[in-house]
Length: 317
Ligand SMILES: [Zn+2]
Image 1 (cartoon, rainbow, N blue to C red):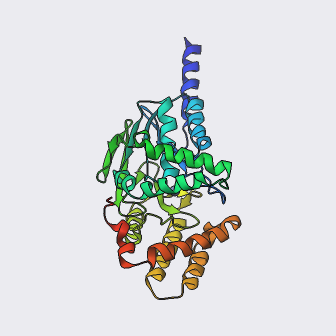
Image 2: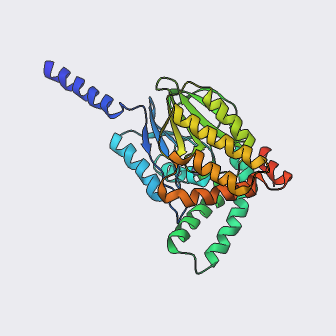
Image 3: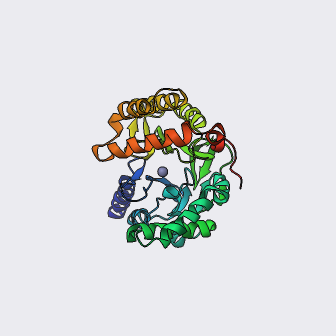
């Protein structure tokens, strides 16, 4: 009897050790020659694992599935921080193994399907028709096109329509909805016991990915993040930050947007971003970050007034 009890205690300790960290991070990469994967974060819940963001490439989704297998726990829920395909494409890989997985997201994908992703699909066909498109890029394009053609593969089946405390897979989380930020509806999570904020692309270390952004709504969302008492913040791309690192990144973001709205020379604004965010930009991405900052300055911060407001209201066909 005593040895059985000892064995049970040891087993339960082993189980606890397996989930001692408040989260498990599967880092996404931002390669220079193909599309990025967002970070994936796995949380333990009473009914199984919760996966926040599922990446783009099949190799990334496989890492999530391998982790669940190693933990011997099912994936009970997915939370998508936003609809960008580097955060949602893996939903389908996970659904094929766990068909009953609950998928939580805002409804922003609907407007995107009618506009941005529709245009994206047309570009995809053009690139696939071009024999110069490399094989690795081709695979990625075909995978992206498949989810655009079959959006039910990645669509949420549980809508996040407002901020509030939610029970997801039996675990209580503070779920925040930031409207008109990096997308029409960005979901970010605050876990009170571990003081961890998981914020998706509201924070991207090397450069804010502003392709579908409402820059001022995004700044407002960063203020809301700053208002919770987190000590650890996991961005959509890049390394985990502490509070002071986040505040430094936020200052860099605010300065960049302010500069963009001013008539200061473009080059000066790009220099400003590179300087203010220097600690978050590794050597390999220095030129990438500058190029992207310049592109977002032209397309999102200094385009026509109508274009600047395009993502500050619901997307419609
Ligand atoms: Zn992303």
